[in-house]
Image (tube, rainbow, N blue to C red):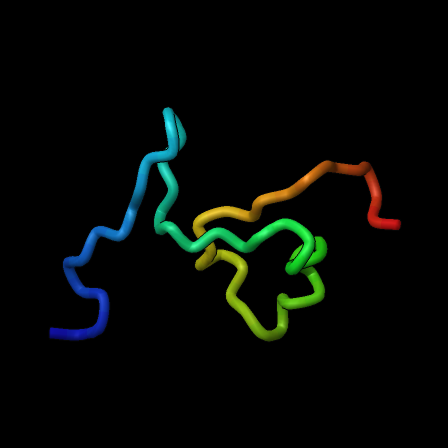
Length: 57
């Protein structure tokens, strides 16, 4: 069996369904762009934030 074949890692948080339970924590992941070359951002289940702004500072 290949890695991940047939394994459903999705989770529900209330009414929101995430593809997997991996959530990058607020304060440790910036806007995510800093890690784009290291991590496949599309593979994350979610990105937790404290607040939002129109443009990064």
